[in-house]
Every structure is written in structure tokens, then in C-alpha cells.
Amino acid sequence: MSLSQFIPFLPEIFLAVAGFAILLAGISLGKRGARGLSLLSLGSLAVTAILIWVVGRPVEGAHTILGGMLFVDTFAVYFKLLTMTASGIVLLMSAGYLERSDYSPGEFDALILFATLGMMIMASGANLVSLYVGLELMALSQYVLVGYFKLELKSNEGAVKYFVLGALSSGVLVYGISLLYGALGTLDLGAIRAALTASDTVNWTLNLGIILVGFGMLFKVAAVPFHVWTPDAYEGAPTPVTAFISVGPKAAAFAMFLRLFLGAFHPELAQWRIVMWIAAAATVIYGNIAALTQDNVKRMLAYSSIAHAGYALIGIVAGTAMGLWSVMVYMLIYTFMNLGAFGFVIMLETRGYAGERVGDYAGLAKRHPGAAAGMLIFMLSLAGIPPTAGFMGKLYVFSSAVQAGYIWLVVIAVVMSAVSLYYYFRIVVEMYLKDGDEDEPAPLVRDRWLDAMIGLCVFVTLFLGVYPAPVVGLAQSGVHALGLG
Amino acid sequence: MNPTMIPIPSAWILYLSAVLFVIGAIGVLLRRNGISIFLALELMLNSANLAFASFAFRFAGASATAAHALNGQIFIFFIIAVAAAEAAVGLALFIAMYRRKETIDVDRFNILRW
Picture 1 (cartoon, chains in turn yellow, green):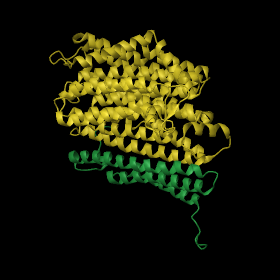
Picture 2: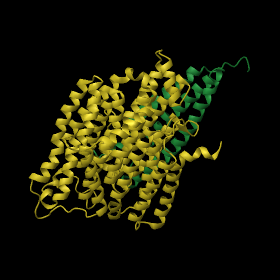
Picture 3: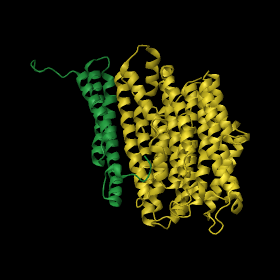
Picture 4: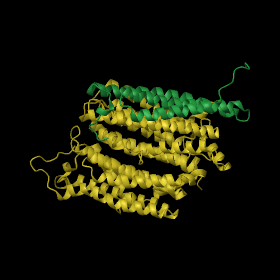
């Protein structure tokens, strides 16, 4: 037991310490230091990223650290950097929002950092113990964040519903893990894969274990029929939190999902493909249909995020190397376009929960053409129209499924993408074709940081739409880490 | 070991854990009182603990698999720790709710469409 084995774990240790420091700084600063604390939190994320670059880079030969608890591979680094970027953008978006609210920013920023730490562990977990602890660290931080506006009934209610269903799902997950342990005697992902490859006997304990773990993961990515928490948690949460839980934790949950089902359980995947197929099809259909009737923009984006989880699941159904990297690319693209869309909702919310109705967007293009153009790009990208990144993401995922022979699933997904045009364009129509209430024009939040972050999201969405090669290359280097060849 | 004492077969413990898990899951879904839901959640987590313990007990019984026993026993401690953290967060959320509504009956949490 030498100290040197903790060196590759330094980024996580640093982030945990920084989280506590910001928690304490937040208590002593009170409400004043929102922007300073955001910058400080962003700085600690940046230092963590540098530390990952310096000490946590994947080294040939040494694939796990801390006695086989965590992987150090390109797959982990990809998702770590992705979730950290998402958290950083949310931190900058939320600073002004928290200044305008009655709540202190210290705990908020610290909770975002703790959730990020959990997501980093989920991205790199090599053992069901570390994956479970990382997942719970992320989930517990999220429950508190959703209920952060503790005097708002909506926020309370969203948090309680999220907590009850989230805890239920982790109960299911952990019972599934116990059955897996009983069948195989190990919790190590590599050993699980080896044991599954070696034996071909049908074992009900093992099968039940895998299916329960699968249910737990489907809940975390908000797939049908485990999606019921999503609209309520998204609507009730403060908007920066909604932006956060719709991207970072979803990407981390997909990282864990990929690690388990395309990594450890891969030899058994053929058996579960039909379950995944049904879940993916149901998620795409239900998410898009339910979004059609929503008048609340946050709720509409919640159903849209359910639909996008369904699109990403298609890559897991494909189960090939391309399926894997296309999901990785999709999560990155989804992160930027969804954060941008939620950033725009934050912009409209001058106070409390105002500006969430679709009608609040009427005539926006006349008064604020720049902002409306940004939202137009995010809506186009979410609907999957070229030349935006959303189109490229869908193209990769769908072609991986076509190559693997799941034509019907792709047909369903393409038809439902066409349906999704309706609800995304409702907002565009409101902005561009309707006349707003001239007497009382909807004010926009003036916040340079928020503008900058939305600008960044616009840039990435457009850039990856025309030149996705760098991200595809990065994701492809992660394929090898999961042993998909 | 006392010859009159017959050890409980580990499969029975496993069945008990499955029954507790199902009771817990049904309780979470059907109970309306926040505290009852909480108890049901704890029941689910502890049923997993019981399953881990019974599997570890079975592994420890045979020398070929004795090395596996530790994995499950360690996981139990992590579940206990996480359950404690979950209780802290969950009760805090229920208290925040109670302060606003003076009830923890989840049927009354109906501003957001379920």
C-alpha cells in the first residue's frame, strides 16, 4: 500500500477538496459572492482537467487503479471531460440566475462539483462498488439541487418525486448487483466479462440480476417505462438545475450503461437486445408524442430529452463498435444543444418561474433577433436538421443501427424525428411569426456570462454540424477501452 | 457445532430477501405517507444487504469460492453508508415539503402533473 498508487486519483481528490472549500467559502460569503464562487468552481474544474491531463492520462499496461476500482482509459477521460465541461457551462449560466434569486450560491456550486465528482467516478468505475458509489454521489447531489429553491412548492415537489423514484431505482439496481454477485462471485467488470464469456449455461440468478441492473440504468437515463420522474423533476427544478440534470448526469449514466452492457455484459447482450429494442422504440415514440401537447417549455424539453435518450439507446441496441462511439458522440452533441436551449429559457426568466410558457416566446424575434436566432439553431439541432450537430449525431447512431441490421428501429426513430419537428417549430413559429404583446414586451435577462455560454453552445452546435471529425476521432479511441475491437 | 443445531439453508435467506424486496417495492409505489415510503425504501436496500450476506455465506462455505465472500461483505458496508446518506437527503426534502404544506402525504403533492 504505497501512496504513489493514489497519484492517478489526484484529479478526483482535488475536486472533492475543492468542493468542500467552496461550500465553506459560500457559507462565509453568503449571497454576495455568486460570480466569484462560480469562477472559483470553474477554476477547480479547470485544475481537475489539467490534473487528468497530467496524471490521469491512460497509460499502456496500467488500466486500473486503486486495486481494480477505477479504469484509467480513453473512454473514462472522454466522459470525464464531457461531464466537467457541462458542469462548467452550468456554473457560469447559473451565477446571474442565483444572484437574482433569494438563495445562496455556495451550496449550489459545491453540489454541482460533488455531482461532477460522482459522474467522473461513474465514467471510470471498474468495479460495481465504485460504480454504485459514484452513481449515488451524483444522484444525492441532484435530489438536493432539484429542491434547491426550498421555499418554492414546485421545487419541493419535484425534488420529493425525484427522490422517491430515484431511490426506488437504486434499490432495484443494488438488488440486481447482489444477484449478479451471487451468480458470479465477483464485482469486478473484467472478471464478470471473463466469467460470462467462459460459461454458456442459462442461470436465472444471473439473468434476473442483469435485467434488474438494466432497469436501474434505464431509469437513470430516463427511458420509457422508467421516465415518469423526468417531467416533474425538470419542471420543478430551478432552470439551471434542469439544464444540468438533463445533460451531465444523462451522459454519465450512458457512460455507465455502455461500460456495463457493451463492456462487462457484452457476451450476454444478444439475449437482452430485444428488451433494449423495445425500450428504445417506446422511449422514442413516447417522448416525442408526449412532447407534442406540452405548453410549458421546460416540460416540453423534458419529453424531448426522453426522446433523445431513446435515440442514444439505439446505439446500444446496435451493440457494435460504431454503436458505441456514435452514442459517445451523440451525448456530446446533445450536451451542447440542450444546454443552449435551457440557457435560452434562463434568459427569459427574469424572475421566478416566468417565461416558461410557449406563449411567452411570441414576437421575440422582432425585439431580440440575436437571441431568437440562437434558439432557432438549437431547435433545428434538436430536431436533427442539417447543417447542425444534431443531424450528424443522429446520422451516426442511425447508421450504426442500420449496419447492425435494425432497420425497423431506425424507421421508427426517423418517423418520430419528423414528428418532433412539430413541437420544436412551435417555439420557432411563436418567435418569428406571432406578434407579441406590444404593451408589455417580454424582457430578457442581460447577463454577459449567460450570453457567452449560449454563444459557445451555438458555436459548437454549428461547428460539429459541418466538421464532426475531431470528436468522432476522440470517441473512436474510446472504443478500444471497452474491448469492442 | 452443536449437532442438534441445523443451520438455516442460505437459499431460505435468499427467498426472504426476495420477499422483503418485493414488499419494499410495492410499499414505495402504493404507500401515500412519506415516512412509510421511506421505510419501504430502506427495506429494499436492506433486502439487497441480506442477499449479499447470504451469497457471501454460501461462498465462504466452500474452499474453492471462499475468496469471493469478501466482495459481497464489503458491498454491504457501502450500501449501509449510502442508505444513511440517502436518509439524510430524503428526510431533509420531506421536512422542506412539510414546512410549506404541513403534510407529507404524497397525494397532496399535486402541482406538477404526475
